[in-house]
Amino acid sequence: MAKELYIDLSRCQGHARCWAIAPETFGIDDEGYAYVIEGREGSYDEENVRKAIRNCPERSILIRET
Ligand code: F3S
Image (cartoon, rainbow, N blue to C red; front, side, top):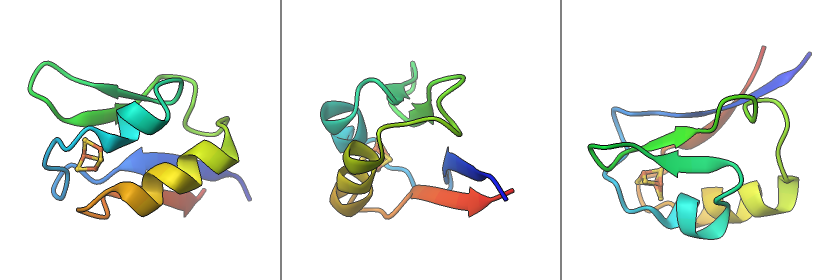
């Protein structure tokens, strides 16, 4: 099974800590919400992403098995 990193946009409030911690993986769109940079959904720096997950106050950074 593969892992897929994604943002739950029903929870994201635009705190941008994900982007501050792991700008190689997360971006912020024009409305201020996070997205996973294309191509990074299954390929990312594990340590940075774990840190971003811990630091998102809304718990909106998630990983699912695909
Ligand atoms: Fe959103 Fe959390 Fe990042 S609220 S902008 S996913 S730190």
